[in-house]
Length: 614
Image (cartoon, rainbow, N blue to C red; front, side, top):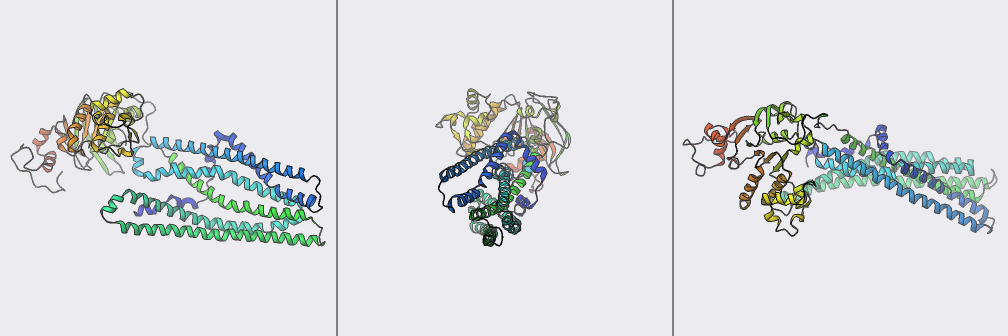
């Protein structure tokens, strides 16, 4: 695992205090469900108030029926007791349903909002932020908020209601004994505060170690083939043991705080009950005004009930804090500006003709580390142009800039004479189809992968597009043909078959501009001719840009643009560029041996090192 991965752990921010602005913003998500929240809150209050009456029922039972040995009315009393707690059960049941409905609805709204935001983010965002981190926003961070809405805020309010209700009952029954009972409460709060601070650090350690463990597992399971190929299993196991051991120790540390806190709370509670019994005995002996045995029974029960919500508040604090931090991360994403958007009043919409022009284009991914340097060229409507050059020369950058995945710093890029920044973004990109070397197929059917969810492309057009690029030859042999399911990323299909599906997809959408980015560089020999026919068919009547390393695939292009270190060095046909004996000629010589290369010149090619090959 890299140092950067080890150092980056957002969970370490859990230790920060609450931000009231975030809390207020979170509450906005509840406004659409305020009736449900209000109903749950009312039911929580009623349920906890009814819960606090249980010791009082004990007091009445002892003083009115048990001590005087009276049986008259006991059945009526029992029925009342049963009905009260049946009502509490009903209230609690409905409250749980309402809270979980609210939690699920808020989670749905948040996930939808985050996904819509991610769909509109520019490509540069995904260059900067790892996919795993982004997925965490949609999964664990949103789940943390669900716990906040279903068992956090409402439960805290319920615990507070119980505490104040119990204190009220204590003073109602006997204020002197109530003061004795409350003597231990400050001790309990001190103990709880100690646990909260130390356990929070322990929870933070568990979360960060868990994140490291997950990151390691994701990386090494994905790269299992490479690990086995280089016999690195023992090294990987050693790293895993170290990370796993750190995670275990973090959990043990947290258990240590729990092992102190809960017995200590029980001890303080027992001490409080002992004081109540002592005070009761002192009064019952007649030194002070006597109190009944029923009151003693009620005070013992109230003491036990009082300590439970105070102890629970500590756990709820950690739940609330984790949810606040998770929401903070979510809001950072939601508040991130989308840099590439459609203009408020686009100058151009709809279908393009297909004329492309770069005018003195400068572009850098980072500050002034220029990837494109003063590039200018024009591609006419229906022209077939190839982009060649070594890796990193700027070929793919040209196509990314044209589709406005990134915005340039200097110059302008025009489509049909209109700056692409003045085009409606949706309409601009709808004029392009891209076929990549590594074809991305989604889980679903063959037909769905061709139409990509666009229901305006009916089944007949899907079949027509597949037939035109000869993809139907293998699709018809599948058990379910166009309904045959495709596994993740096209697993189960050969490279050539995936390429054919990609060409069928491009043809089905009928773009005005076609971009082939190394689209035929990894095709096996058996299907290469079939793929070439598909390429020729898709390129008919369209402006085409072919990005390629293999010069054999671009010799028939109308024009070839040669890039080197972000600069456009040469432009011309295959024969013209060979005649210039420049960069293209050198590149061509490197790709063909003297025996296999065409004899286009009598002079021997110069001896080139990798550094000066281009």
